[in-house]
Figure 1 (spheres, rainbow, N blue to C red):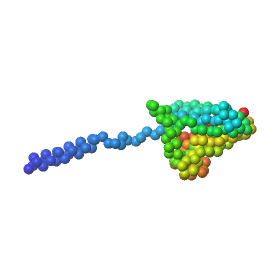
Figure 2 (figure 1 turned 45 degrees about the vertical axis):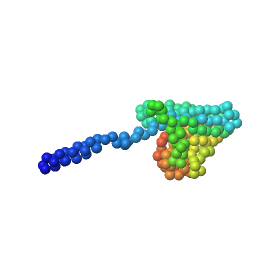
Figure 3 (figure 1 turned 60 degrees about the horizontal axis):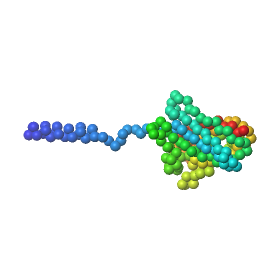
Length: 181
């Protein structure tokens, strides 16, 4: 009887050890996306052949590498259609198209444009399925000749999509130099 109890205990212990070594579905924490590349296209409403594309690249996110970005040059007293054409994570191989993911989940994202000094204004022209601002498309109006900057910020889970300074998780906040001349 002593051998039977000992064998049963050993069998139960072995079963517990083996089952705890099985592969779980949870592979641990998932890698956060790194927003390495963001591009915008500006199309002059009065002349569709007058287009400008600007790109912000930050290949290591908030690491040691300095970002590269384009300067946007627009004509004065003009109206431009603006489109976010690219949001990618180039830190993966192959790179990940984050813009399509963001568009599919548009209720949970907000693109915010903010201008500093330049005679330039933005207004959102596209909305999510709840008719709330989304911002992958916008209108930009220029004034007199000027220089300055504008920022494009992507907010995930904004508290309010009606407030440009809405709280939420900031996925990126990139600054572009702009010249109206």
